[in-house]
Figure (cartoon, one colour):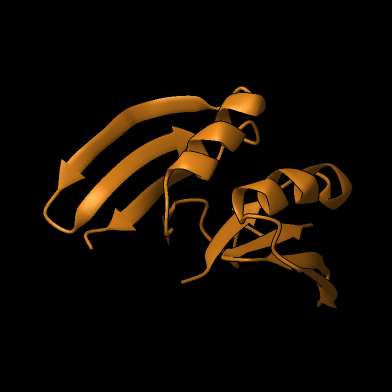
Length: 108
């Protein structure tokens, strides 16, 4: 699953999302007038782009612990604390860049 995220500056945003993705490899490339970076489940983009993507997405993770650690380090706002839902455990958080994500740890 890929989560699309609009960021102001790839240089500033990539380390944050790399932490969220557990140190995933970063691939950067241009697309039309956008600058893109693929970081684990995150496709970051910077440029004039409302027509391309949405800021809201669900990201499936193996464990919520590193996600909570990373969100805490950067001062992200937890909108919905970890809670049990039929498919597993989820949290909803607002990143410092303003995007809102739901993180889901599937039931084992």
